[in-house]
Image (tube, rainbow, N blue to C red):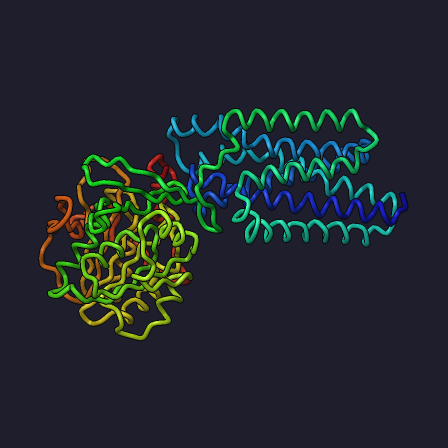
Length: 504
């Protein structure tokens, strides 16, 4: 084997090992989303743990080279990284039930998941670059040339793995198939360095086959998602509701329900916060029969569907960033796409398309559990909303926070008050202990005199305007920041959800 071919071979292995690590990182986020969701904190944990593994691997690789490690050591390390990557699916079947029963906080759960599943593969993949770089220097003494080449190949591999998994692999093959494929690819690559050790190769192949069989026996290869997109693990769940109202389905995005639709009663709203939004619109306008709506977020299209059924003359525009969500809604949730104008892009640029004073109602339903799109909670965005609403228009949003001192909700209200004269906060119940709640916030320039909202249709329900008592307790309003495009410390404000079991 010529020296040029060896250098090419080492470069290719480094490229592929780096790509595999980034594929595992991106896939890990999707794999764990049904258990811990997707937030800044889960991504921080994932990146931090894998970087720690990579650093440890780089250090070990250097030590092994000094102790005489050669091409076979690199091959064995690469094969073991593939086997342990595949084993992560089996380990998940063991760890997930334990962590779900043992209620802990979101950050600790994320650290346990990521460390148990992907730390060792990251360590092993981190060994490859320094080991093969050192071996390449024995072939070519041009130190700068070899170091630059190998680091460049590692970086290019990381870029390729990131783009391939994010833009293509996950949405076409699913997380589990991508992990299996990555593991097999690593084993095949290792064979190019272990081809003279046939017994070792056979043992490694048998080990991977046994882990694959074991994982299958524990249903570790079963994808919990009915559909996977670039954004969500989407599940369709048939509901057995306590009231006999016929066939009903809920859409689950990652691990949070985003709408329950009833086939034969589209106007029936099950979730209290959705019903509250509907009642606020109905009771705000004297003639709600022909209003123009903008929805930031579609999900199962539960409320748009109900509004279109109740008031067919309404004009409804929906910004749903994920086209796969819309496809699933049309396929399983009894949605007629001709009833709405749907824009498959982010809500903020979508709203900017429309002229000023165009909408009667703007509804923000884009908060994915405790993953907050920061650019949709700032003063600049609320200025845009205000400009697109008619003078008597109404802005509604729902958000998850911790009662009785929801700092994020208070910050939202404080920011909204820079644009709207009248801002209120609604809850369907007042808990007697600290609890995760879904708050409904209404904002407009017309005064709403009632502090109690009664349901006039559907399930009997009552909501309370808690604006006054909320700001009289807990954090002082002067301690709460305004939210702007330059400063939106959302994760700090919802830290109660992140540092306690309320976030799971």
